[in-house]
Length: 365
Image (tube, rainbow, N blue to C red):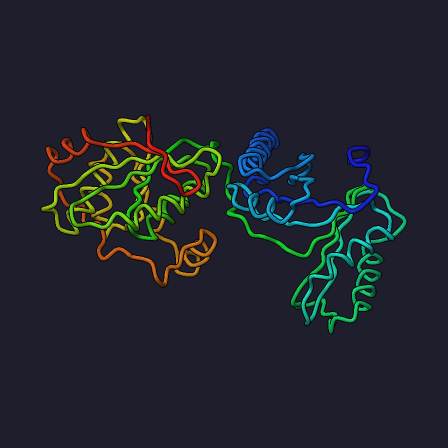
C-alpha cells in the first residue's frame, strides 16, 4: 500500500470485503474473481452516478475513495461476491489523525454501550491496543451517555490501518457473498407471483450464474405481483438489467397443471437458448416426483429451496427486500404430472422478450 495514498486530511472511503467463498479458491482463480468483482463494483457505481476518484483491490478487499461513501457502500453491498461493505473515513496513519477521524465517526453513535476494534498491517509507533484504548477514551469524553462493553457492545467503531492509510468506520452493510455474476454458466429461472421463485433464482445468481427470467401468463392470473418480483430481482443486476421472457398458458389449466406446464415450458426454453439449467422455487412432493421430473427434462432442473430451512429463507428474504409474511406462497408441490406437449409447443412460439433494468421495463426492439 505504501505510496498509493498520500492522505493529508479526512476523506470518504468504502471498504468492500470479498466473499468468503472466493477466499478458498486457488490463487489464480481467486485473482480472476477479485478482478471481476472490482469491475462489477466500478460499473455499478458509474451506472448509478456515484462519483469516485480511486478504486483498487488489495488482499481480499476493494477500496473506494468517494465523497458519497454511504451510497457507494450500499450499492457495493448488493454486488454478488461481496460479503459486506462499510462506509468510513480515511486519513493518514498518525495517532492524532486517527483520533480526529474516530471522533467524527463517533458523533453518529447513540446512547448505549460501545467498543473500539483495531487491526493493523505494517510498522507503526503504536500497537492496535494503544489505538483502541486512546480512541475509546476520546469517545467517552464526548459525553454522549456511552459506556464501554468489549464483549457485547450495542455499537462498534472499527479502525483498519494498512501501512500509511487508516480507515475508521462504524457501519457494516451485509452483502450476498457467493461469486461474482459471470463466473458460472447462465441459467433460466422461473419467476412467478411467489417470493419463493425470486429467492430461488437469486440463490443461483449468488452462485455466479447470470439468470434469464421466464414468466408464464394465464387468463385470470394477475401479472402485477410477477412484474413486482421481476423488478425486485433486477435491482441486483443494475448494470446489465434482467433479461425476461413471457410465455402463455391455456386458461383451462388448474393450479397443479399450470405449475407443471410452466416448468416444462421453462425447461424447453432453456434448452433452446443453450442453457444447461432451469431453476424453480417449487419443491417436488417426493423423491419419485423429483426422479420423474429429472428423467423427462432437457436441462438440469435445480430446486434451490428443497433443503433450505426457514431461518435461512428469512435472512435471504430480508437481504433481497422481500416481506415473506405478506408475500404469496406456493399452494402445492410439483407432482411430476405429464404435460400436453402440443400445448407447450404452442406456448413456445409466442414467447415475448423484454428487459427489466432498475425496476423499469425496457421493451426489446
